[in-house]
Image (cartoon, rainbow, N blue to C red; front, side):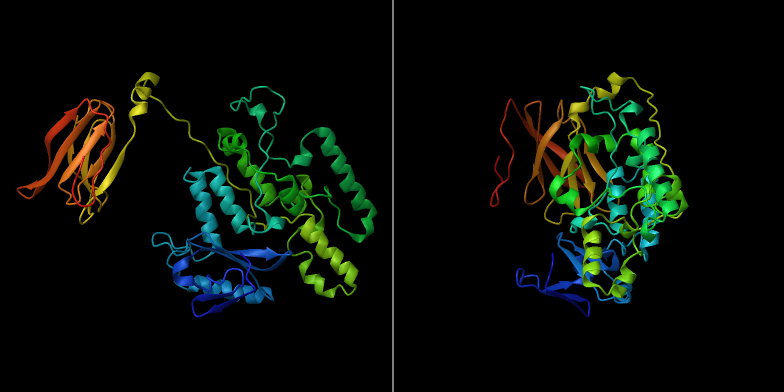
Length: 422
């Protein structure tokens, strides 16, 4: 969202936007979920805020110092729904958040896609700026086979090399270019391997490059999981710049990197040269911010040890349809069901099991409903049986008593608002 002006006032974000007058004030303490540092025209002056409803506020400031003052103020403010202020794991810095995300990914708590989305956000990439769109690896190499075999390593590209380094012939061409530019000086500009970038506004807007479903599936498989750290080193890590980037054949034009141009823009006096520099930044690619200064740890995908036969594992595969419903009027208990059984549990603490009725149905329980007073529960299953259970207290203990059943029926189970009906 782009407002005409944004003003931070005592815990609120005031928006002056003629197109969206309804979004006049945003309660930072209760509405904001995430906020990130964002570059704007390669200058560290942007800040992106995301609220619980999915609205995004892209703010630009006059200077980096002004942006940092607001960023620090947001960290100090008790924003209750922010990922930085979670009650279990409070993150008071982006560094700690990044470290936590890496640990989650390494142990399998985050998928490759989820982890890359978070790294892109921390590196200043956003879906709301086509010049800094999130970047993902090109993982497949086989585009000739009629059937794609995702179990073969040869199906995937070498993630330790940039796209220009795939193939000895291409790699030699870019090495020769860099060597020639280094020796000749190339009009005083730093040498580079590639004159184009892997992400720019034209690719996003006109080529419409997106993750295809088969690419998303391949991105989560074992080969990519075990080698993704190498690609992260190139894009977000220690091989992004410096001698390591030269060795990895990973150097782009100097104007694509953060911190190489923005400070000198004010020194460019000639308006045409300044305009050309800005056009270069906005149209020909921007490299993400560097997140890691050392090699990214590799993710070890654990091998699943199967101690049962495959037939045992798949015997009831189609019956796993567990579901549940809260019990009115206080909604402190829940009734859930699965393969033939019905259970009554307390919602807190830790969903403790209170009572379970086994073998209500000969197959999976497919649906259920509870009456408005919470005393009657009706379940239906694939066996064409409708069971009626009564929830009562006996000597202070909750019990589910089987009151009857209807067989050979195919009707659905619903409860009316005024009176219970079947």
